Image 1 (cartoon, rainbow, N blue to C red):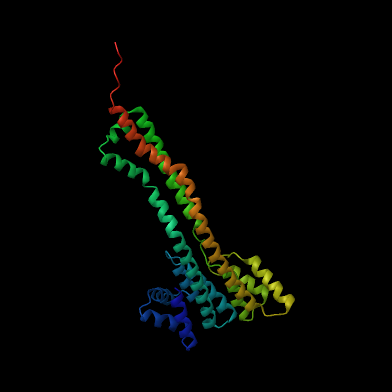
Image 2 (cartoon, helix red, strand yellow; image 1 turned 45 degrees about the vertical axis):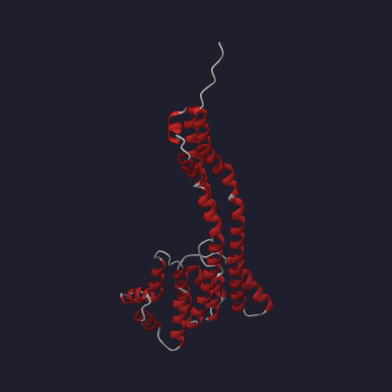
Amino acid sequence: MAGTTLRLAVLLQAGATPEAAWRHLAAAGDPTAGHVARRAASGLSLAEAIEAEGAEPGGSAWREVAAAWDVASAVGAPLADCLRSIAAALRDACEAQDDVRIALAEPAGTAKLMTWLPLAGLLLGFALGFDVLGVLFTNPLGIACLIAGIVLLVLARTWTRRLVRAAQPPPGTPGMHAELTAIALSGGASIDRAERLVAEAPGGPRPGAEETSAVLALSRDAGVPGVELLRATAAQERQSARTEGRLRAARLGSRLLIPLGVCTLPAFLCLGVAPMLLGVLGATPLPELPG
């Protein structure tokens, strides 16, 4: 994704037209460039062709490229420089998401493994020679243990899945609102027009409008160019997203102990330990009373 965008920037900076740059990449075997080139040849504008690629599964980042392409074309900003900036932003965002996924891999994997603990208890009972199924399906106490164990197991898996999903990084590229506004301003657009272009860019409204407005107000008050301030803000937002993602991953490890203690371990007792105890008690003859 970022590599294709960066190669586009190099071709454009070397003097290739936008259409020719996409065709060159398509001829070099880039599948995304091939899709975009074919759509452009069928009559779509390049921004529309790139946006259509963003609608494909896993292609959400292309919506950001389409937005940058649309904004840069509207204000006449240099496409090569804009694409280099977007490629760097997408690379940073991808690295941040990879960091979070790596940090989440261990606690998420452990949580999934622990949800199989009650079933391991059943297999242990079989291995030790206990009539676990007979106890669970014929003994009234065994039936109660079976129902309670299944309910606890389903609850544990659902609870764990929700915790892992909540710790995942949110969709989208952090700092993209500020990045697109910087592209619009670099092409000579006024602040009002830049904000309007970003709001109307492919992909819909993006979060961060308030932060961008605050940076622009600082730029006006200090009398300094807003483009670099906006790009620095975008970089800081991406760094903050990476840090927050790592913190969520660290918190997940301790939060997963809650469904483990409340649901998984009791389910193990109901499905693994209790049937073996009931089997032992049922197989032990009662002592005869004297007389």
